[in-house]
Image (cartoon, rainbow, N blue to C red):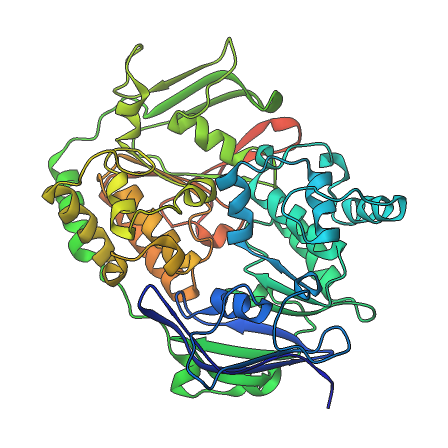
Length: 499
């Protein structure tokens, strides 16, 4: 039997008076590569943090953690964290939240020393290693770009390269394929599938097709407990109720009833919802989209497709009103005459994006995050009204997360927080939903429920613009596609049935 690297025994975790992990036992051995699966809120991310030593078990008198990473047995993680690299949405969100606008080269270099910001000067050999990683992960052309100017997928790839930079023996990869286009995903899979000299790793995922071919073991976590664990073939054959269990199904009908009735009672206006003409769009002084002419007609639903860094998020940000076309370009929004404050438009638009999610991590509760959508704000400047709370709870109930309303963001999973952001987008019954990778972090069952609800909204009169990498994340009502190609130029296609 191979040598243990990390061992947990009888470890539990209570966070904000809520049980997160319950009597967990687990051993990672040399040569093992694990897939960790389970529904949203099951405890996967906190499990990874406990393995690294970033969170401590709640004292019970039975808990034990051991690390065997540097040739001797340790029961404390002090001095070992550089041997365990973590990549996940929470680390990525820190750059947005704290304004760590480092160059891509500096981000990868910090991985040499397990630093958040550059504090140590690399040697010539270390600089050469960073250069090799930048080339290996197709980041060389972005090496001088600032982290916050990159797309979500490009930021993720920079953090993957950072994880490979140091002396890590173990990689903890939390939904690491989220936000990556197909080409980049294959490059990352190839790095993880190295037969020799590679890392041992644990990877969480909600999509089986993302898993590298060399997964040796699978663990299924449910409600904070590991309900099945072992060699991959054996776990895949396990048809027990515990392994096959899924999250409770939300019931969207009640939340949707008002919106559908309003749509039936209101004649659809003929004016286009959005008209963009001759627009060049810059971000951080870089031309992202070139000479764009695009009309979103009344009743149309659109997909925006393109590779990482092509400009999908930038385009949605301009429609929302956070960015503006360069001089000579125009954007017209229905019901927003010249001189109207953009906040009037934003309160009629639902907006979901990874960057918006990163900003919601302060003292607000999940319910307050949803309420903030009524004011198109991050945080609340005034005490919520009774009407605010009723509207928020209606949508929290629709998504099956009403029981989370009093929790803080740090006490819920990334997928549960994404559900709260989608509820926030819908709380005002918007006429337009701008959805930037809305299914990121959602397990398969919840993803299906969200897409079903979005389809109902689309049929009820709410227009959708969805930026995605995977066309399986589109709803059937989306029949129009804008593809962003090289040089920031857009082409338009019609989606065929079943595509």
